[in-house]
Image (tube, rainbow, N blue to C red; front, side, top):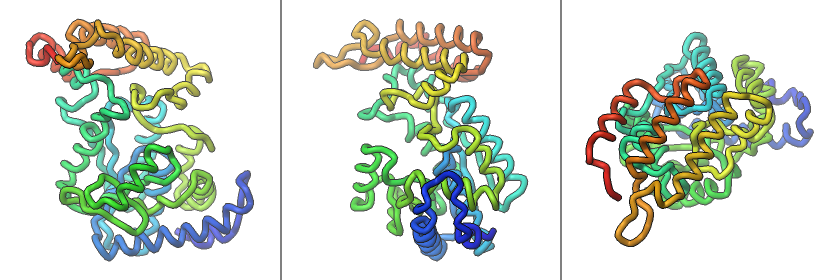
Length: 337
């Protein structure tokens, strides 16, 4: 993979001319970080989401694999069962190509039945995730991946400074706090037995796009899947029911483009967001604060979800999830706050 040569060609496409020279320095820095990681641990677990950053990370990891054939390269995709349909299709297509044509082991993990979005919300009454109670990521993404790899190896992520103000605060804290979840640059942390690193933390969004559209696409043509999906935009890969963000720009963009399925999914998400705030849909704690979603509201959610599933022609909740939700709804286990 002739990354060095391709980058030095300075073919800019439609991106600003200053990016090439600046990016070359950042590319070299990332390679230096990878070399340090290689010395530390040769078993790499690349956490792949399907987005531009993790796609760039996979390509870089393949480059390192070419330099060091003894790297045990694993690409892990956490399918939450809630991924935005178009983006899930692209992610699976890219992973299929990685498994068939490149020297990497691809693993797809899914949350355990008790940890799925619908079982936790409909079955157990968890309020939809938010910035202060983000239960989804640890249970639906991190836990399955760690269990698969038995906390063995070096977990490498495509996290970057500049993605959002909240994430920047968390990342900066991580580099100062050895017990934090995430860290980057050439600093790594040990979190409950695993190492976590982010070698492209210093890249800008424009530089990620330059890398994908120029050197990455030339040596790994399958990066075109991601480029074609959302081009040079700020779309995010994630769950269609994501309630952590106030406004889901990706879903809104698809809806405005005239996608009827996404429009209906977005409407359902917004209905949940509005209804969760109403006191009549929640158990109320002794101190007056809202607690779990009450049983009546959870039954309504399940009914509307099943109706939506038929309307859009997609599986939005699996049969095992439905069965588990119905069992929990029949019990008195999660009644009350």
